[in-house]
Image (cartoon, rainbow, N blue to C red):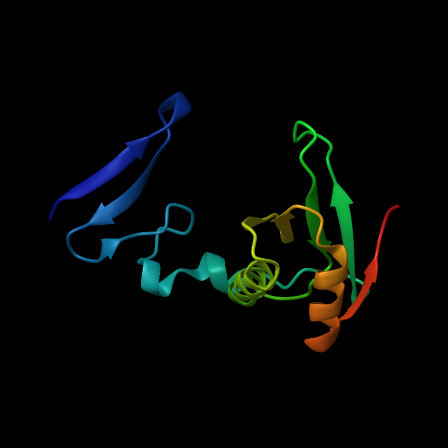
Length: 125
């Protein structure tokens, strides 16, 4: 049996691959297919209102549309981001349960979220 590990700071190491089981989760050390870390992650908590805002801070003056408060798991959140990016024709990403879309698309996003059955409103100025 061959095992590979990744060494971190202060001599810590974790198993990342085993020829017996394949890739393993570095947190729970289970095979990826039986990882218990993902199963324990709960849905984000909130008041059920999706807030859509525009922000430029920390982006060298470039505006982005932020979608906060979607109570969806990771896969559904990524799917919603994909749909919103396609509807607006822009790029974007998901960071810390917040969808970021490049540019100012608040009206389009609010309209799409309402069609999808979410309670959405504009936030900020």
